[in-house]
Length: 247
Image 1 (cartoon, rainbow, N blue to C red):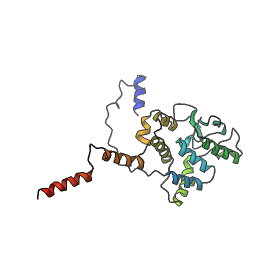
Image 2: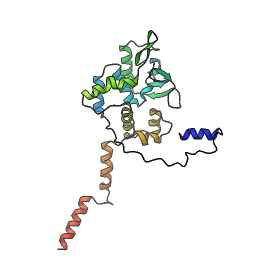
Image 3: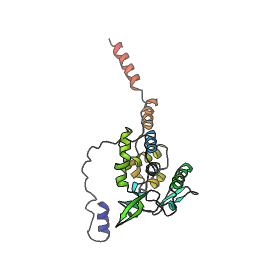
C-alpha cells in the first residue's frame, strides 16, 4: 500500500504520502509452524512419485517459489550448473517472476544436476518440454503445460506427509527450511537473498530464517561460558553458603 502512495506522490496525484507516519496495529499472536528436518524431507521425497518427488526436492534445496517451477529443460545449463528462472505460473497461466530480475540464475551442485538429468532421461525430456508438466484442457484439446502447484500440495504431497506422521508441509515451509539451512551455514546474506528472489536482504532474516536447535544451544551456553557472568548454579551455591554462615 505504501508503494502505491509513493507512486501517487511521484506522479502528482496526491501532495504527500498519508501512510508515511501511520501507526500499524499490533500483530496478532501467530504460532510458528514446525520446520521439517532434513531426514523427514528425505523420507517424504523418497515416498513421492516422480516428477512430484523431484519438484518437491528442488523447491526445498533451491528455496525457489513454487510458482517458479515452470521450467523447460532448456533452462538447465548442466555445464555451468545453473537453472534459470525465466517465467512463473499460477493456475496454468504463465507470467513474469515476482523478482525484479528476469532469468534469475540458481546455482546447483553436481549432485543436483545429476538428479535433474536422471529425471530428464527417465521421461525422455526434450529441450522445449516442461520439466514438471501438467496436462491442461485447452478447449477440446489436452495441452501440456507446467504443473499446477496450487493443487499439487493438497492432493499429492500433504496426504503422504500425514501418512508418514510428518509435520504439516507447505511450500512456504520448504522455502523457510532452505533459507534456514543457508543462514545457519553462514552463507553470505546477499547470496541467500538472490537465491530466494527477494529485492531486499533483510527480508530473509525477518521472515524466513529460523533459529535451529544447534544455534539456540550455542547462544544459551555462550553466556555461561563467559567469565564475566557466573552461572546460576554457582550463584545459588554462593548464596546458600552466605545464608548458612549467618545462622
